[in-house]
Amino acid sequence: MHASILLGLLPFAAAQVTQVVEAPPPAPVRLNTTKSGVAPTLPTPFNGVDTLQGAIMMPLPPQPGYVGLNGTAPAQTNLPAATYRATLPSSMFNNLVGTTVRGYVEGIGTPAGVRFTVQLSGLPEQARYGPFNWHIHTLPVPANGNCTATTSHFDPTNRGELIMCEAARPETCQAGDLAGKHGGKIATPGNFSTSFVEPYLSTQPGSAYFFGGLSFVLHATNTTRLTCANFVQVNSTSNGTSPSGTGPVVPVFTGAAEKIGAGAGALVVALAAALF
Ligand SMILES: [Cu+2]
Image 1 (tube, rainbow, N blue to C red):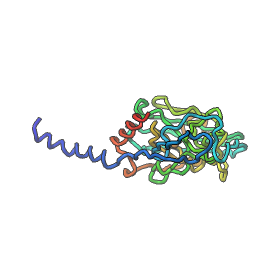
Image 2: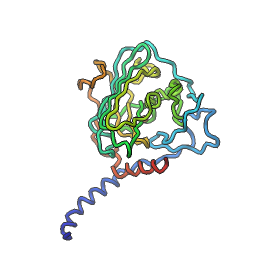
Image 3: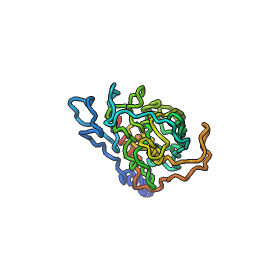
Image 4: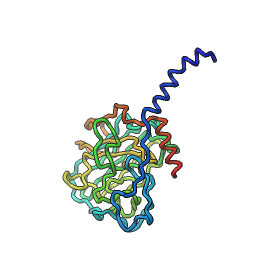
């Protein structure tokens, strides 16, 4: 190959290097305490726990009797028949996975809890990035689409996430841990859909279990946040089909400053794989 051709390729090579180094991945952070510090089930000795973006990377197995500092969640009854829908944006918060996950999560109040419908498409490659975790988080997604700003799982009973949710006792789980209570991480390729009734969330504004205005977050297996959207009230209700597209506009991520570069993201995945 002529040297002139090589020189011509240099700008492209430089651009690729720049893309990787300008957005380093968040480093895992080792915490020596957990959010709730719930007794009596902390390991002895407790040597801390690795977190990524505030989430525990490897929760301990479920343990019978483990509940939050605020006790178990009470069942939510006689809820307003209001519908709240989180519609995923057309641009992924984190594009390291090479695909855009689209779809929505919708919840409608019933006499006994919230009936949720989940419809996702375009899930990333399972072998590299899955299975995918999914939760309701404590804070809304800001206008710039930064999923990290949603902070931790919605957790009105202050349970923490050191110990995995015991699906057979959902009242002891974090209220926002939809995956933990309803089928686990998403392990199917491509598309995913499910529906269920969730007794420990509410459509009643003012309730400690109200999820309106909060956010839905989809994670890669190492907890990296892939995409997110806010639950906004909509007039129509789901009948199991796709949304009409007439719902409110949700924030669409357009900036680049918060994104994780593809190469950097792969490093995070590799690191997580090494830890597992
Ligand atoms: Cu989450």
